[in-house]
Image (tube, rainbow, N blue to C red; front, side, top):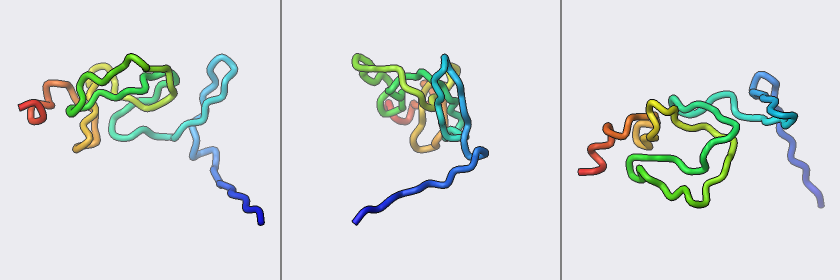
Length: 90
């Protein structure tokens, strides 16, 4: 017996980027106030892990926090400045 799985996606559900001839399909929105990048770090700075190991890091297309708020707060689901993590570091 064979099964087939089909997904119905409209063009309005997708955001298409053309970068050096490579088509990247991504979700229309990022969580919280994250921004999309075609080449971002695999690791995410968080309050509980402010300095993640980046020794095996690679360029991946993904959402990430912007440079002016580079830390992801899992509790509040938003990007923040590192000094806002005080509760975690006490």
